[in-house]
View (cartoon, rainbow over the protein chains, first blue to last red):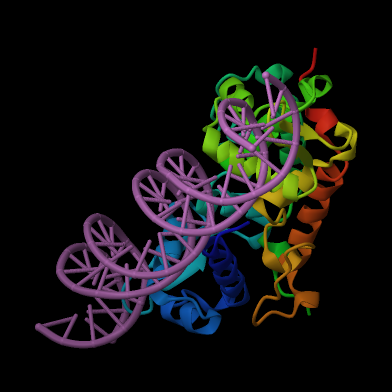
Length: 137
Length: 137
DNA sequence: ATAAAACCTACTAAATAAATAGGGTAAATA
DNA sequence: TATTTACCCTATTTATTTAGTAGGTTTTAT
């Protein structure tokens, strides 16, 4: 399951998409509109800025904003940034790989199935973007 | 990611498959062969027995054994039993559904994508069985 | 200068995961 | 029937992760 943090991240991003013509948006505004603890949200937005998803501006008139078009940000990127691996096992993770002990991966049946699962997930999560989760009319 | 518990469950099941002609297998034997804490494994096997995956026999000559053919046990069943939901969000879970607040699910873009992800996962995890994760030759 | 707003780090609390402990109960065997 | 074997069951402990809080720092517009 996605963490609360990741869910909040998606809510915030959705909000920033809706308001993207309005320039920088205050953390406080997102926090209020989306019912997310302000300080927690602050951390989440900061992570996304450092992760290259958001831009920010300090001082009066400041706030957060998207630095790319929504259709250029795959959902996989957000999930990996906030929650880490998408795979179900470390030994099949592309971005957070860890070898598993006492296991010959080339001949491990679980490894094979879980690789298939990972691929099925990524086929969706790498191709669907923020644009796809925008509120429908 | 799958918990350690679920990973241990799969290791134990794999072992029981290999030894399925030998009658009941001791917890202690699985524990030793697969390097899993005996007491922790005990709990895991018990859960799987209660969940209808394993049978057990007490007393001398006792132990655990599969009560179905490996190809009759989908991986999804094991995962749900040990770790709970397979879906990434409660609002798209088939077996552990929870409505999400302030969200019109029918028009929620995230809900739609995450449903798709769930389906892709289940297409694999409901169809692949223990037989598919048995060690290859 | 002042006020607004993000930045950054540390800390706390709650929840969950992982492991341990230990007596209870049923079955087999002698 | 006594004894041993081995699963049964619940509670407790410990470690890790998640969620949330706190408070000062830096930057920017006016």
